[in-house]
Image 1 (spheres, one colour):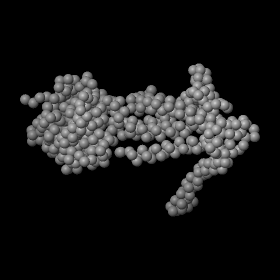
Image 2: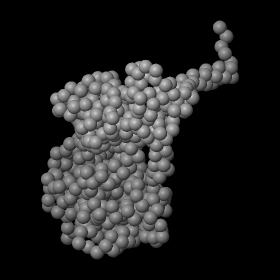
Image 3: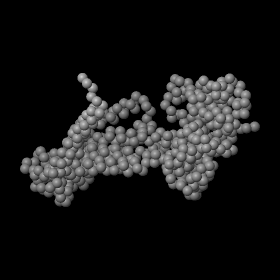
Image 4: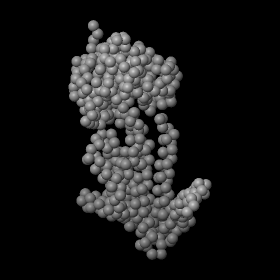
Length: 253
Length: 284
């Protein structure tokens, strides 16, 4: 029996008067990858940004419904605490204008994770995080260089390392490979597969193939509605809904 | 009428634009030329670092230089922290509603108020109501109010030039808003903020009207001992020696103007150099 990590109950999201998510109810299993597919404007990103309340910063955004993390309501939680438990990787690599080392060390320092630990502890965190993001070997000799000088794929893995450094429980990936070449994409996917042993992962992707490659469970969103959610193996072989079938076979539109 | 050929109209446009550019250069270079030509003979170690003598017709302008530096540094020390804090609030925290828009509009309009009005305001509030008297502090606070709109506007644009992705990246890690501002936004906005501050100093250093009623003295025999003393100030001193004192040697007038000009221009120069250095160091 898999453990349920997050539970979404009757979630409705709006931007001003426009409803972008309608009555979404689903649950996310622990230590699995849930991939969310769907055409653009189907509300995937809004859904993801709601899960760690990044959407709270968006103008005109409001919502109804509940989201639970380990059975606790995330909307009554402290926002910063929630985000340190539910990390997020953006579509575009967003390194901070700091060195590679400082990018990874940034959040542990700010969140006071180093309190009472020996001084060397931060070096350990940085190394483990970079190793887990399979970036260590490429950057270990130039940790003091600016992160802005790295390639796009490296930057994206650096951003993964930055999230791992605060050891969250859930990691949200928002189209993490949309700007990357196939080789970098493969590396990020590999990293994701390795990470699900320790973390629960939600992956929003425009790439149907990617969802079928890495997802344990796949959800199909269309026009703000959840059309279908099922084990990836089942959904891609025998979708129950016609729209899902049309979308995954590329006959949509 | 026959249309001009593209080649000819291009030539015509370029020469017109060049002439316009030259016309703007003429007054600037003429001012500098005249002031330097007439004033350079007055400049000496003694002129810069001694007290005026013989009813200001001889000696130096040291107290005026000290006074200007004192007033300006006190004013920037007040205006910079307040202005930067206000800019942070407006840019990072304030929601985009009617009140915020009115505040922003008010700040822009504050920059358009004539400087003599600031002077009268300073006289009313600082000199009389708060009882500071005509003093460095009263003049500095008046100038600080004048600097505020410039500092707030430049600081706001420096803050909004920091890419939003930096904020999102930091916030998404569970870092608080203030920590994000403190560790990511401010360090990256600092060059722009400092440039704005220096330029606002350059702007107020040459102002006469705001300090006329609030800080400046016709003549003081001693250097100021505290911020509650009156001081002589370069712009006001220049006004006095060029209009109020008969038989004033011309080279002292122009020499004083030259010192003021060099002080203001070197401020702008520092701002330009600082901007170049920071731009080179920028990491994105």
